[in-house]
Image (cartoon, rainbow, N blue to C red; front, side, top):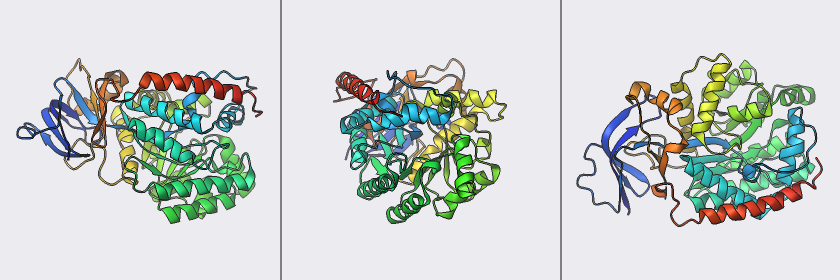
Length: 440
């Protein structure tokens, strides 16, 4: 048994109703918060004591949709053709990159994505993976990187027929099911049943995914209607709305995650809500890909926030999503967006034992310690405004995941961070050269 104490700190809850408590102690035993309050640690014999004076402790942020395979893409130098629509972006950039990934590249992508997430105060990443040249065993490689750095997460493989028809579909489903079953008792990483997008998954593939979900108990993780092309394809090929097609195969469950959804209609949103499925908004990626704006997000019941592979910094992502929303005439306030970010913990609870998302006794100890200097009063009524307008990843000082201090005073104990980044740069350069030879 190990006991960690954070003494005399400020606790700011990011789950509605927002609360702020000053000068309290947090007592953590193994992986669970045992007590929070004034003098809560007075008689506690601790293995580790953290001075929380002047610090603000919040529940760890959740990136509800990530692409760890994008970790080596930053500044990628390749020759690429025109990218004037979304399908061209996929074919000229992302689908060439993922075909160039091998085991080493997936491993270093996982390491650096996990480091970046922890450094910015993100304690859980919901990953959506693709590496068509390395499918079998790829999810173990992603999980290995997550576990070595200490981030919590789920991962899955993007089932698709875009490279190899049904043989590729079958390989993707097999990898999803294998990992989802094998990871049930892993402390930090669990499996979902992934799919790329409806326009690259035939009915036979959706049926196979549904069977894998029933066998494993895991939910689906799938892009839907990121671009209008997905909707048009569904109408042309299947004469159905996308959500009707997914519902037909029983893929809408309360532990499933649909991503983007920019071009879904209101009736489809209502069906997603009726099935209690989660819906990830990725504002920055949507802007980058010029696919439009998701105007129905205020009607989504279980809205969560992701990055779609644009890193793991949820402070940054939330600001961009909030300001884009206001720019588009939306009426949500900072509290609505911060609550959506925290709601990612409800998805985490579908895959891990315990309660997540609060700094409170009985909850899992996934915490971010911020060195945030508030220039104005920080109270319950304006906590979310401080989160959006003042706090940032720059103030993240230490991070605890599953009760373990994985980053302390900006340092990763026992991890050669410089060495990892140095080696990742070498791997990236090798991958880029390979990608440059791959035709769209």
